[in-house]
Amino acid sequence: MKVYRSEWKYTLTNQELSLLKSRLSEVMEIDSHTPSNGRYIIHSLYFDDYKDISVYEADSGLSKRFKWRIRYYGDDLSYIMLEKKEKIESRCHKKSCKITVEEYNKIVSEDLVDLIFETDKKLIKELVIDMLTHNYEPKVIIDYERIAFVEEITNVRITFDMKISASYEIEKFLDGDYQNFYVLPSGLNVLEVKFDDILPSHIRNIVESYNLKQCSFSKYYYGRKILDCYMR
Image (cartoon, helix red, strand yellow):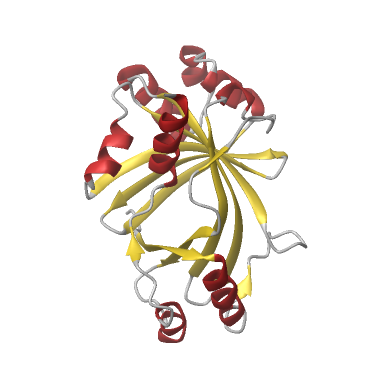
């Protein structure tokens, strides 16, 4: 049975981020995987089909959709994740599996027929089937810095995503040496609030005390849009 989590998104300024981060630090813990500087860098490679269906679905606001992506953190290539994120309204479900650099290279080089028989990872097989039948392929790199807070008892996760950028230099994804274009104006960031069934009132009150406007922000969608503007 799939478990869907609520995911609320907001945009906020640097000042709002600083104030909200300070208050949340009093009631939540920093993610244990966070480096000593308090933030980490996420690199994500997003896939789409030949019709760019994920762009269309995000633009039209369809309530049910999914996205494929491959992700790693900082410069650590020992921990590369393949993820399929499904969304219904503001609730999300994510499937993921760890993949090797060799598996990654076969996926992006479209050496797919051999891969589907070699692997026993169901999620890789599912992606390969989408690539073979619906022409899914890598489309864009999205990078950003993240500060993450967690509340383990109630399984709440709150993240601040900063310096969100996009690149079309897909072949350099694992090298990290590619040209980026910022997706949002300087000083604007994204807040994500993720929880199961109920957001505890003391956390909810903190988030809502700043009168932030909830939105359906898609890093993939806005990354594609900003790159289209630069590439014209």
